[in-house]
Amino acid sequence: MKQTVFDPLRKKHVALTPEEQVRQSFIRWLNLERNYPMTLMASEYTLPYNRLVFRCDLIVFDKTLRPLLIVECKAPHVRITNAVVGQIVRYNLALKVRYLVITNGTVTFACRWNDEKGKYEFITEIPDYKTACDDSCPTPPENRNDRKAGPDEIV
Image (cartoon, rainbow, N blue to C red; front, side):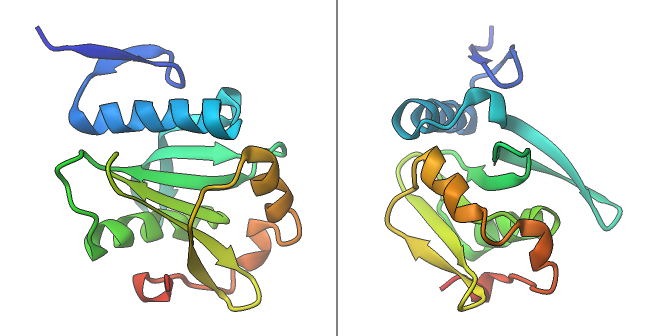
């Protein structure tokens, strides 16, 4: 019998894979340590883009329900490579969030969109929810449609 874990965002039990363990740990961490409300998070968020359908591991919305942060989770044994970065960048073409996070539970990379420089920059820590929301207000994501973020733009 397969082990399962309760996903509080999907409100159901799901198979406890190594990647799912990372996702559930990160959800709890965002909620308990950074005060991100569970009610504004979604797991396995489906998003259509150019006739394709992608599934984002974790998305957080701001108080106006605009996408604020996306997280790509990998199993602990999976290395964070350019292909993984490319995956989250593809999701972001549709979402245009301020923050990107990639984690395998052991290594976590986070980036923040810099309006002045027109690119993502690595940050050393993920902000708490209030800070992230306050930070996202000056430049709403829908006003940044003129930019294209490729893996080489994350510096």
